[in-house]
Image 1 (cartoon, rainbow, N blue to C red):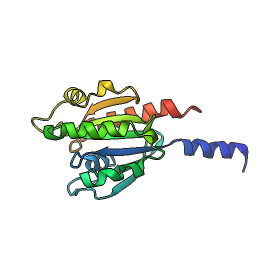
Image 2 (image 1 turned 60 degrees about the vertical axis):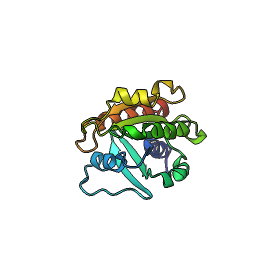
Image 3 (image 1 turned 90 degrees about the horizontal axis):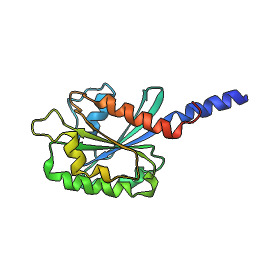
Length: 184
């Protein structure tokens, strides 16, 4: 194998991005993943373990780990932290009653050493539902402006309509690429 072949293989390997998608149960993680991948979203049941999807986006191979958010599963989240380039935190914008729990769980993730340096995308999902909080209100409820340890961005979206999913995925991919991929 020649040097150029080795470098090309390294570059291809480099263009892999590992994204971890977390959030409370019923936030819409699996729906976002399926919608973004062009799959049917009519029959989605709670994720009791995890789903992994590998898809191409803007020249990157995204390995997206969608992990169940039920209270009984959250202690297992740490098993998925290794080698995470980006964390996608999904919030049910219509579930005002659990925003404090949502904030607490996100805060505990951001102090995890194995997630240090990971880019954070917050999807304020379910913007299509009446009475849902907008991205600015979610940003305030989660105190996102206080986060100084991670690059972050909040994006209001709807997993059902697909609105703004591309915007969020473009942002997280670009942010990770600007930090990690230096050979371009």
